[in-house]
Image 1 (cartoon, helix red, strand yellow):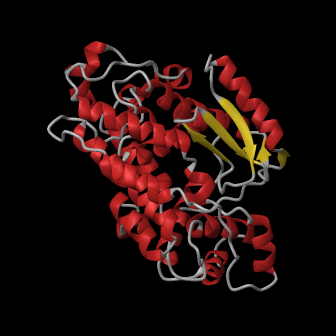
Image 2 (tube, helix red, strand yellow; image 1 turned 120 degrees about the vertical axis):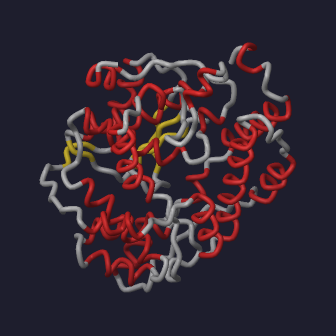
Length: 365
């Protein structure tokens, strides 16, 4: 970051932003959100358990980190002050959910982040057409790790690493604070997934995080409040540009939105059965795990509703682009459609950044 961009930012904001960033560097939220025994729990569920008996790593650090967050004070009179304060609140609510692991704690987290899909979104999801993906699985986690490492090297993204882990629900995920891409040890991949995941994970998640490191505050790298929905919408759009989108992807993302509504009123077994009425058992299991992960007792109604951002994000980004929005403004870092990026650029609070070749080549940027 340059003095020109930081000199007008109050010291309280800079200190709090640095402290929040260091917290994200030392805490791996996914390691405590995701069950550590997914495969064993699935076996017991198939054998008749009411819900998979998920186990989790002990988040005995939570209270200490929440106390730290409570000490962070920011000047809300600055344009970035309220954004940073909101990031701090969101992190605290995530930690409270990991500490308590109750439907109520995850419900408050969903309310804070506006993760419950509206009736309009659910109705749109119900109109999506299912398409079967018949392409065979040809790669495992080690193969994908190698492909992602090659893509990072090609882009000169030094200091980024790729690791294989068994404690995650997604196939691949990115942690910008730690400069790390994680690949699920149990995941299988189709041939098109190489192009798809390089576009999704590296040309969007990694690149926006890397560009954000050049801005005056770390939250532009770890993510402004509300930026996740834009990020995932952009990532899905990048898959389309790479010509590697999964057939029926819109239907599956829409099914997740519908399942979020069901999960609020259903325990794991009922949710799994409801999803199985319209989807094959493997997909029903995967969605159920993603929506019930983090909860101490998944047999109870309750939901970790974050995955609404995929379906809602792609729809909102499409509308924004149709209205004249420019992709380049989304590459100053991890910002959202609702953030006044052009105003910040005009005021000298942010600097311009290059977009990945995938976008410049296809969109003429």
